[in-house]
Image 1 (cartoon, rainbow, N blue to C red):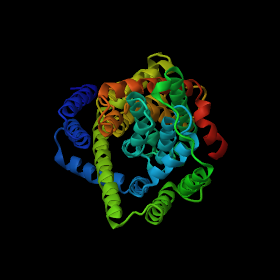
Image 2: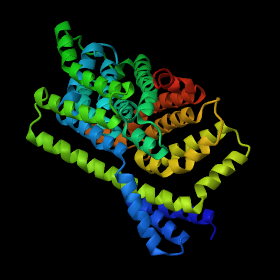
Image 3: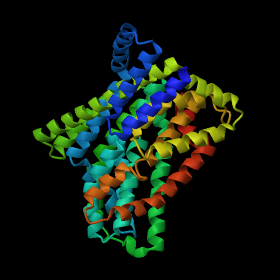
Image 4: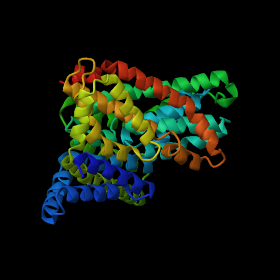
Length: 443
């Protein structure tokens, strides 16, 4: 068999194993090891030597230490009640508008995503906080669950973002620059979701009735409660952008500050600390297992020369670069039907990244192209969290809203998917929006 045929066979076996619900990390490791041994003629010694070096090279990477720190920061925010403080603050400011509580939920999702970095955690946490209030204010089940499912995706778009860290590690890109590039798309996403809510309640007022107006004293009190959270976010992000702390150091400071704040103002006790540390450790172990499996798969694919051959074929095919990129983004949408965000990035970046870097887009430099592509991938991967049949955020929110049919939740999220499509199209044709902060402050 040729290398291309072996590579194609590896992907076929991988998809079969995923359909059989084998863990993605184990699946990629087994398929990669099988491909490696096939290309090496069954020699065990080179495989064991490669495996030894592979594990050490990946897991000793200092940049990966940022992942458990951001996860721990999110755990402290969850168990310390900081999510409730964020929701109360935004709700006190806009809850008296028609659709205001749903808008507040979206704003709180963005704020929580800024200290969490995980969409699933953002959706689960804000669902528990916001759904009772939305139900009390007689919001429709479709709008309530749709807004929260879509708002949860802001967890991976608003920096810090764990998938962006993984992308940076895979492509040797700057974590700080990627975080900087994600800020404006994240804000555009949040504003787009809020506009969708306003349009829905304008066309159908009974879907999101106005809530009671909150006294000024209560508004000021709620703002004061979230001010420390905002300061933590500023310290982490400005520290990374300003260059006085690398991402790992800034994340460590943020995790420690979040833990202290959760104990002092949120009332978190020893049990909450134990659950936070254990939750962060479990999530980190899962991510590192998937990383190791992806490295093994990529090593096997590299021996087959399949990624390089595909990149050369695309470059020499004469196809329009935009057509190629659009096809790649559509593939991500379809992959979102069968696998999660992290698995998609780890599985596809080693194949698609060389293709994109070999094409010309809008006169971008290689570094700008790498950052722009990373943000586009992140946004399309985010869609996979809210479209059928997987749509993990939808199932998380629907499970919390036991009285809302799943069909209503899927129906409620459709207008937000239209907002996602408009935003991706905008940033696809105007990469300067994504790169503005990087070009201005990235040095």
